[in-house]
Image 1: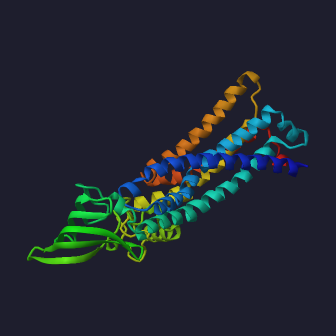
Image 2 (image 1 turned 30 degrees about the horizontal axis):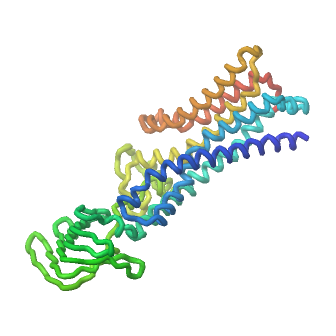
Length: 382
């Protein structure tokens, strides 16, 4: 009977969690998707590239909302059970309050594991796939971005100016400035031209113009009656370098382990390890903070679960019951806030760093001990 009761309780939490998670994640995703519209409007990518890229951000958004939604889910379900007097079913079946709290703590381990899997594997992988997708995509929206009498620089090291853009796709008075490297550049001037799609790539077919190659030691011009200018050789202006959020977790752990074990390290010191792309040219601070977010922050799920579970411990005075709910709710929000603020003090000092790393476990032990006192537990209840 007890198993059936707990199964029903856990199913209610899971159902509410997924409904709330989907709603919040979808709202945040919509807002973020709007912010990424510059991939089309400014960077010239197609709508297919845009929707694929923003969709790959869903795991990251979901992982960021888990701890908050999980707290709200437990809080809501327990409060609902209490208002409908369903909690009496637990007590009438001989389930002690401390056993109820222990179940929620054990149940929270599932969500802790979910967060760790997301943070360590799925989110970095999806973020990296999104970056690679942008990097390897063509500038498919370029024809629609070209406007008359405007400098267009949607791709790196390339500026295009068109005097006239006709409805049939023909261009008149074209100016192209291509930066080859730091010292060398190329300027192309053409009387007319047309954008052509060839083998899924865009090229500019230019007519009657000249190409001027500029270098520190020499400048020369070549005239042409017709030439094709391949736009596929240029990369998007969108950032395509691997960010620390996209780096492989195991490679980062390996890198940090090697550094801390070999010498005293400064937090702003740049890691020089060409064999490990995840760490190379990054600071110790950025890698350490990212690993902290992936490995340590999920453990705040345990203390959040305990705080929400303490709703079952009613105050002796019914007058303080509503205040009791508010206190528990704000305590949960406070712990979530502390978990995010702890990153600001990470690596400030060695002792403080160790304290911040152990803080979730310390909070769990302290709060659990307080709950034991309030439930007047006996050893056989645990």
